[in-house]
Image (cartoon, rainbow over the protein chains, first blue to last red):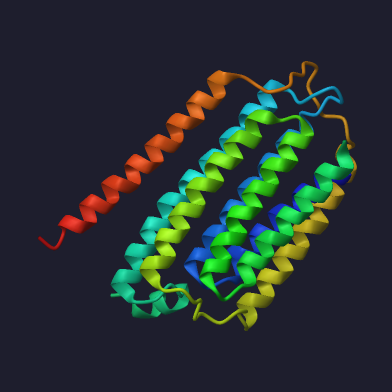
Length: 98
Length: 153
């Protein structure tokens, strides 16, 4: 129970970045934190006491590496958006649209 | 085993929050990379070696890409530190609601949802596949940079 709650706190920290930060880089860091939280949840669920289930490890690995890869791709998009709009502020981008 | 892993995961969350709150983007980059490394340590302590290696690989890629992005966009976060207004309040309510819902859901779930078979270290096939995912992501980044660079020609 304790480990699951810690995983939920990690996801909540990422959620904080996604929902409340306006800098696009920080939103993406929030997404990465959420991926770590999900991975730790899966690892915890696969813990048998003598080790971690192989399937759980694989799913968690997909969550971590997939999350990092998606964030990396989005970082490039964020840099291109900065070149176009001159800001990383998502509200400012919305205002400058069109 | 649970306590050291839980402490390391909480340190990961704290490092992530420091990264989110810092205004110096170099510090943001460093804290993000460090969060991944501490998370990898937590996974090693939990016995999930494969996940730990994946976290280190993902963290290194993210750290390098963040460094590149910071160099391109400037070293300081000029955006307001904390969003205000009704949308920010709705965001805070959503986070609190998530934590409360998670608590009650986990309370009902109990603790034992583990599978019957366990193994230390995972499989090398999984690592190879995730290595290919990283290579594909880097190739996609390179392709995007090439495509956007040629647009003006």
